[in-house]
Length: 285
Image (cartoon, rainbow, N blue to C red; front, side, top):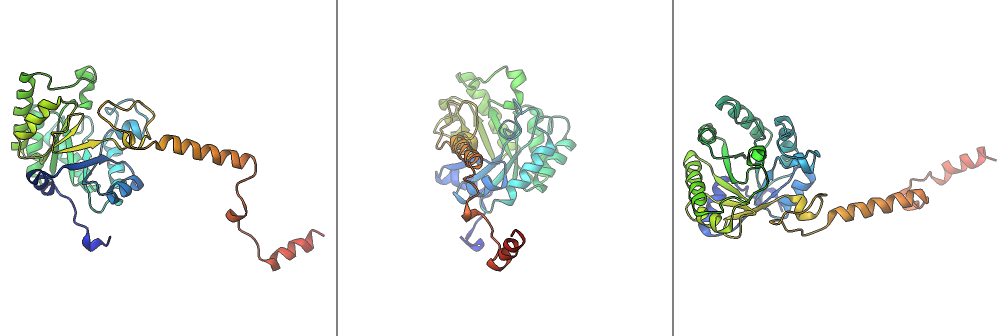
């Protein structure tokens, strides 16, 4: 595919897809190679999620991820993408202190290659930040339902929107985020009925992760999809490959061949020319 035929996906593209009924595809990616493969496979949007704290850095949650780390991974992803819209997570405490701090940190992610930033939560303060970012020319994807950065106050991995009252409250918050300028909304671990109601009452697209089939699009963590992560696959994820075992088997075979002097073989070895080899033969006589 030539560069001339590639049309970059934007926030406006996502809204047009919702309007036409076309489902939006999104996956996470954290490095150049994975981003390149995901982009070439035709995914509409790539999320540089703070889930990289667990999948790439070995943290036990997303709270420990820093702005510096998010910027490094966003730069790597951006170098591998030609078509997909790149969304970068605003990590914990990068947008909760002041408008100035939020603008500065979001600006760093945009300068690192992000086309939009994602912010968790729906408090009045968060809504103000979304509005400020939009006015500054930075596209924002909002995030409601289960919000991992609030794990210490939520107290666990619980499904959200499990009652009519909670659904109405979440829907009202979603509308406020839309009015503040959010170009899309991630709904995580929300009951399918609630996600359907919220999606139907917004003009911006909803992207579900554990929120059922009625969202305007879906997002999953790439490590869950390809079987690279060592932990359990969440109920809402589907594993399409088992890269973990492929990697382990390949490395194990390599190690065995080295131990048995099978690798490197002649096809993987450089040789002297016949004339140069004769010189060594003469010396060794």
